[in-house]
Image (cartoon, rainbow, N blue to C red; front, top):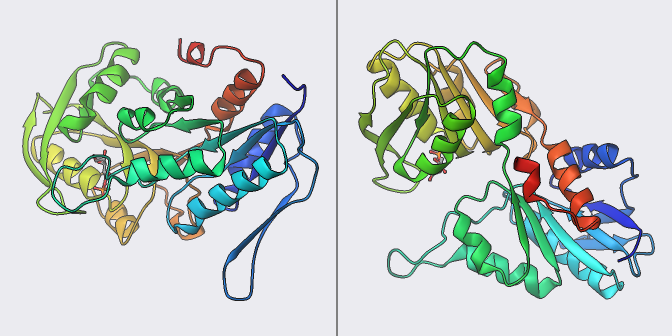
Length: 312
Ligand code: R5P
């Protein structure tokens, strides 16, 4: 195993990459991401990586150029004889089409996994995959981290009497149950959500007693915000008192910010796996950093130590 570890970043989330480097006491690796005149991406690694343990930090939220940059950067590292290349993908995009549940749809998550392996990634470090079976799409090691320790620390500062954790859909129950347990066996409620079409959601029912409760709706992704804000409105209708939300990957697509500001939610706690655009500055959004979690995991991967013990 080489002594040297280097961290590089694409352009999707350079602030997070810099924070990870600060945690590790490293200078960010020198690589440039520029454009040819026609708009094609041009990557150049400006320092020697031969025989080095390389980590490339890049979230793959839209535009798709973020994904392409990651693939090109990994390819550049491979051709420059890096010893091992870990794709550090704090937000693994294209994860929502993860199975062929209707005719004529792609399995986008599988295609993206194939592309990453083909580009030369030796392993993947990611966080809160939309569905865990995506790990099985790779035949290389995948370490999945959870943002929950950072998010739970935020809520632990509150008096959690009368709090209840709410899963905004049945698919999120496992995540929410773990969250509730670790916050001191808080009760759990579940929202029976239907998606009549992509990017629309409909609350059918709430399973659990939320009247006069303070609630935290826990989700992995916030895109249009419909899931979260519709859940909040339905909970308020059933008598919920203070309503908080938490999600790891804050895409804030479309008019979600306006709808957050007009919603009954008191606060939504998100992480920096995806950089928040400046216009998303809102007193209702609290951004927590996952840099130290990712940094510690990189340290452990480099020194061949257990990553899972990070969660014990
Ligand atoms: C759904 O399965 C996910 O966990 C999220 O609830 C969903 O991606 C959020 O999307 P939106 O904010 O557009 O409702």
